[in-house]
Image 1: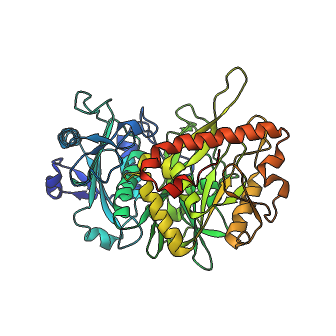
Image 2 (image 1 turned 30 degrees about the vertical axis):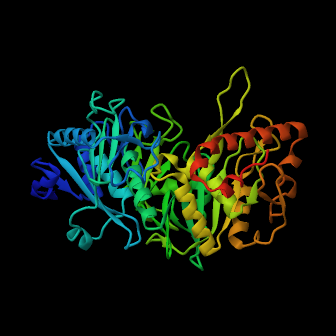
Image 3 (image 1 turned 180 degrees about the vertical axis):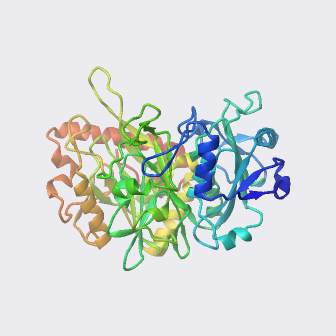
Length: 531
């Protein structure tokens, strides 16, 4: 058994007799089965684990220490709720006290960022083998030599998620609290066992540090051309097709979720992927399905007792079933996960209003506007037999993980676009011929053909026409895509309804952008819809 004496952790306040450091997946499997009730192994070899009552992130319980050294950098508000240093230390002591009552603790040392000059050393201290395996999977795994010389970490995550926060502590609103201090270089987790809090905590750290060096951190997937090594970046909120479209057998996968655009190209922040598992089948997601084997984690899924076969359609525990696996489990992954500068930036939106074109090209100012907006639309619940699309805006396509004002990231994007002459495309993977309930979802094969045409360069000189409401440049000819679907108005039988719906969505864009106007340049605001 690989154990580390607590003398190496006394600076953290850890005094537990037995601390297991950097166990192998096989050892963590053994510990999970022995010590965690409910843990099991699927028929494909993945570790099945459960996160308790919290089966998703708790963004309303995220707190950031307001400190003179960083307070002018932080975009304070509902995304970054301030807390005092005193409250942070109370929660930290509460977490350490809890961890010191455990019979055994687990340490995971890993890197965030594949670029050797920009990577961070991250240490996880937790009491659940499931959490240790999850972060062993999601961080970049050091070589034995790198572990031997790992030294002191840049950031430490104290995961005491089984133990609640004290609601009487100042600035607490529930028994859950995820607290980040840039000055202490620590994250404290109380009251939630959802493993994704650790992953997104690391991303939040990178979202703070990378812009300080002029690097753009991005919530996106990325692929690379097999011959040139040029990359392509896909932004998109849940349901837009980001994961599906990045699984492209004609290209190499750089990563599925978190990247940085640096001075010499892009690099993945993570060493693994964290995919949604709902309705997963080997037919619709063959790469992900085969990756969920020994060494992977299946989270909050339902399986049968006899054969441990997972029912990915069963959402009785949560709709947010997940699978975490090392990126090298994807056959066309490019390891190390670095690539050249992007030739194309793609914003994916599932427009359930049905008024945005399947593909349009954006100017730099429009790219900044749509990046800050981060739009998609979801189908709302049914009331009296009527369904209405619901607009969703998430700044930079990842608002919960931002630290700086969104305009900071948009300015970095603009700088990178000018330096490297990348094209920016807005792709609607949603509805055509009417809003949801009237029109139909744009076929995946047409969206794939659009992506292929972008990557081949076929759209560089394609004919375009300006959209009179949104101002974007609609592409009117794409190989293997019917021309009649490329101009949204042409697909609607009721032209008056189209005009009214387009004006409605444009108004939602304008209203949403008001909260960002004070930090954005006038030309960016002017790049929005025209109504």
